Image (cartoon, rainbow, N blue to C red; front, side, top):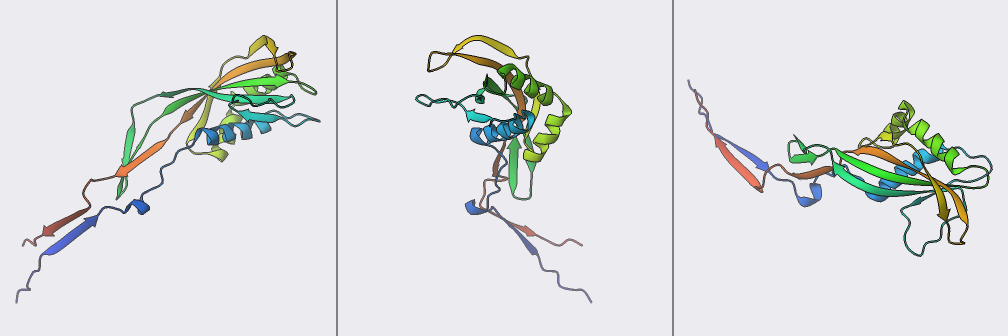
Length: 194
């Protein structure tokens, strides 16, 4: 006796907008905060609090020294985008090199050069990689340039400031997601073959 074979229907539906996968990415402010967290550990200061300012804006007074300002000065794509797939999504990501200039302003218990040296020694060591791996899985330290000493920096009170700067490089892997297919629904009939 032969069994009656019934064709099978396979259905696949695209996810609704609310179900869309949250891609991994950081805002510039989040990047500044990760770097600030590292700076707080890398530059210990006795008897003073280190202030870190994210990208100064007009009409913003600088704090009392010691402090550090952070400015993203470049954002370059390092490679062509790469793609990975899940059952519902196509996720594209790229390797990006983020360049941040750090201006160190010394005063009180610590000189600018001392802060910058503490940063470059620790940033160019494997310790920096260990620290950043605790903060993020898409933002990594690469290396820093040599310290640039600024001879004559004048502040808002027309006073010379103890100042120097360092340019540091980071690797960043932002993700961008799209639905794997543009159709809202795929229905496919499958016949049974002997």
